[in-house]
Image (cartoon, rainbow, N blue to C red; front, side):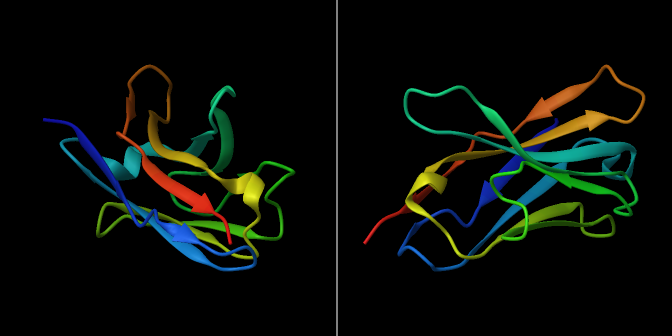
Length: 118
């Protein structure tokens, strides 16, 4: 069955770094645009970053540009989010999403908690 499993979330101090990983199974990973979303308490889920099927194209929310980097490894069915210079406002549950490149099928992971606090 389809699975997206996120990992790497934890408590980190402001200014610190963290890398989130999402491992996919049950579908042809290389045919899917991968994204990271986040949802803070009391707020709507928002797009953080996305990456094309080949990895050649990426885009980021303005709030994370220059601090976060999304990457993927199609051989390992993984997508990662490197987060640097973390701020308290980055605190949220981070979700991995897969979207079929022609549209239609969409899958979500269960989320991983990132807390930025001193």
